[in-house]
Image (cartoon, rainbow, N blue to C red; front, top):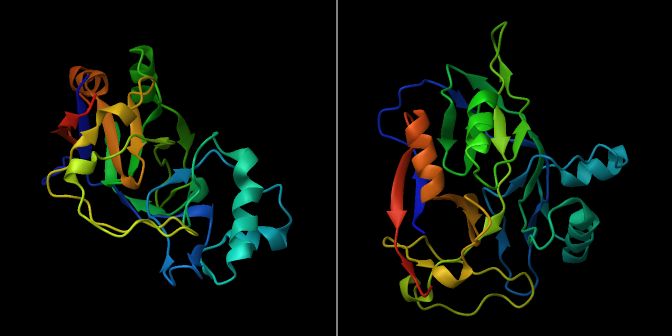
Length: 241
């Protein structure tokens, strides 16, 4: 199986653009172990609804930095039953519908931000009908200044797979408390074949949640159906299968 990194194109056909944001999110955190203040970008579960929480508790999930690490852990564990089993829930993970402001025209698939894939309902239905796995669309609440705004769905993608150790720099081990492992995306990334999912055709790369990976089945279907206008695909080598 071949795997591809989804990316934008230098000259998009469609003008659609939106500001990034979700209704709720885990706060950034100050770790007392490594003294880093940090949060990730990209990981989001738009199907997770926190409106059942008391108003004061919902405020704890607005954008901010949590200095009390024990309180961060409490907030994280409170959400554990609401998210897919096994996901890590890093600082900065977002929840609820995408709700920024939007403008312009959107194509069938849109990758305005590298970490967020949007689809219109009909393309999503057709791709699902092709038998592709891992396609879960959640309706956005993007705000348009026009009478008939388009229906856009954000793909809720699971973090799976890792980079192969051969393409990673030498570095200290992750922080034993917050597990932060800070290093840049390598110029020549190589996927670790032993970690790649066998049941998903679209997913985020664990540890680099801003990177969306599609299988060759996904890429072939997108191209065959004519949905490739504003998305490019870069094949990544796989090692260690």
